[in-house]
Length: 265
Image (cartoon, rainbow, N blue to C red; front, side):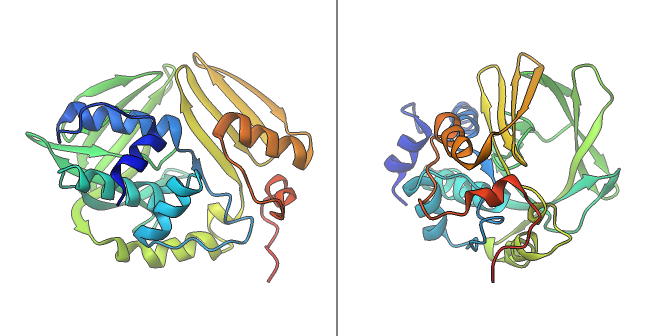
């Protein structure tokens, strides 16, 4: 892995010693510079969980990705810097119930105790969390971890609302290849949420910017503003302006405005 090139992608030039301070800085930089996005799925382009392919897409082509891509590549960067990340599998909550195994990937690191890191869940914790009890305020939300019979549950509480579970995970490590079947499911099954929506989102200094299902959503200091995107050309311009993302000239961008339509065979 070309560590210097990856760090330039993140806009990072700080110390690289494998410390908690380095991990915090890198996670925040990743969330601000590399979007959580699934645009290849509605565009009908396969996602390949191979380190070289992930590096070429995220660093070389300055794209984003979803959890398996973002955390899979981030783990490689951390390992190259002297960390020892483990890939953990999580089940994402929906309608109050956790989803299937390997629904999500996150990272576990030992830094004078266990910590979790995650650059691939979208709107979630922005700095690594210690694995243990306690409520931690980060930007505009609170987070806590609970030990349960099913595993560790990550909860989020926004703007004084009730606690909501985001995902549940166990501490069993897995190789990247173990996530390939679920990655294939997420990008091909009509039951997957990723085949029924398009999303591109990243952290900003004061909130988030998101383009989802043909709508631009700006969240600043906890206040949300939303409007429709006015066609494929404006969508290209917004992706360029807010995410530095350039799609190929022949990409069927109109598909991102009407997610859920099966891609051409």
